[in-house]
Image (cartoon, rainbow, N blue to C red; front, side, top):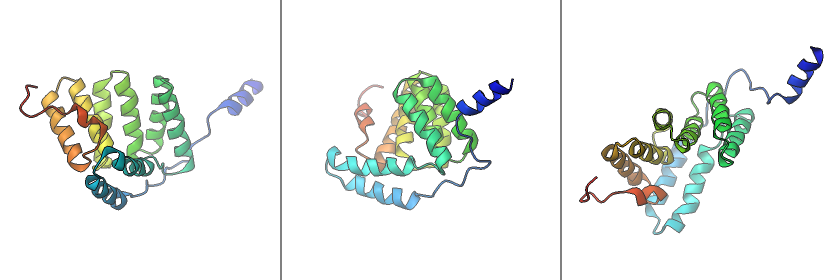
Length: 179
């Protein structure tokens, strides 16, 4: 029994602190970046600006949360979607006001085809960070995946109004075309 406890402690993931710090407020910097991206003349010119947004969104509130976020994103990239979702569940339980935890869990759920759960996560991420254009674009694609094409197109147009160079712009249907 004692050996079992030692092994469990040795191989357990690092413990999270009791309380997650408040996530940093990057709203002013994101606003400035969104202004810059709207002034970009090409997608290539917009890419470093978008990368700067991702750097801000993916800054977890503390080192423990960052480790869980990074591990979940690595699992998602390796298509260990259930493992990624478990990590994002853990991150959200620890940092319930950190929008990126919800956004990343939504992405893993979207890949799995679990659109209703992805949509709930995206709605929460956007509630926490209303100018998270990647979550807004993800929400648009999720709505379209649910067959709610008109609502998805409206959501995509709202995201593109903030960031006209999002890759999802290719999913936009001309208003004159049948949905």
